[in-house]
Image (spheres, one colour):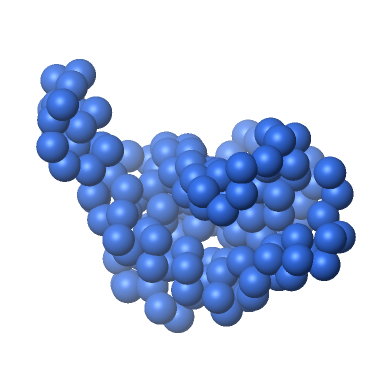
Length: 158
C-alpha cells in the first residue's frame, strides 16, 4: 500500500497525476469538501459510539446541515488565511443550480463556501488545517459539546 495521506494513496494506487489546485472550480472544491467533512463527522460519531446506523445518521445531520456549516464557517472566518478567505468567497458566490431544501439561501451559500475551503485544503494535502478549523468552529459554537449534552441527558431519539 502506498504511504502518505489518503489523497496521496489514491493518486498512487490509481496512477493519477498532480493537478493544479487553482484549476478547480469553487463548486468542484465544495463537492470534494462536502465528502471530506461528512467523512470526518461520520468517523467521529462511529468512534464515539457504536450504535444503530439510523441513530448515527440522525446525529450526523446536526453537523452536516447547512445551518451548522454556516455557523461553523462564521465562527472561524477571522481565523482563515487570505488564501482560504478567497476560496471561501469564491465558493459562497458560486452560482449553483441546486436549490436548498431545508436551509436559507444565505446559510446554503455559506455552507458551500465552507465546503470549498475544506475541499481546497484536502486537495492541498493539509488535513491538519481542515481538522483545526473544524475543531475550532465546533468549540466556538459549542456544537460538539451540545451533541454530547443531548446524548448524556437521554434526549437523543433512538
